[in-house]
Length: 138
Image 1: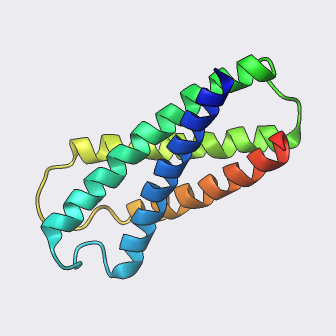
Image 2 (image 1 turned 90 degrees about the horizontal axis):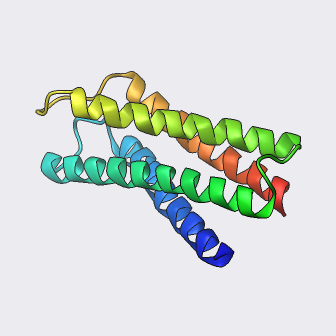
Image 3 (image 1 turned 180 degrees about the vertical axis):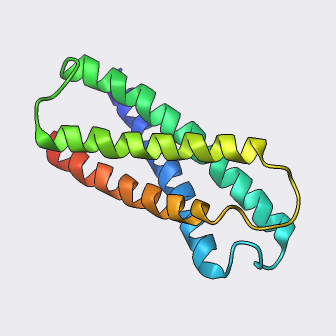
């Protein structure tokens, strides 16, 4: 059981990282509204956004189960606390960006100016959460 949860957790992390860094690569390619093939770019953004949402929810669900099964409800260490803080930042950013995308009218144009900053903060938080997880659990 615990091995299956670990596999699910790591696969979700892989998909979440792909979505997070995929968005960063799109931001670095050019400006958010002037990439070639806007239809394809829009599809990529949608797929990255959806996979990030499914991944972060799966990471949290499997992570809570793994924590409870193996360690109890909490691990008293700075590394674990920092991992939870950064994972929460990622969760909040992904939820916010998905809600924003659902409420924003479809059509041409660039996303709000703070969206690229949120992608950068989210990717950085993901890397830091991973680093602190390694310290906390290995």
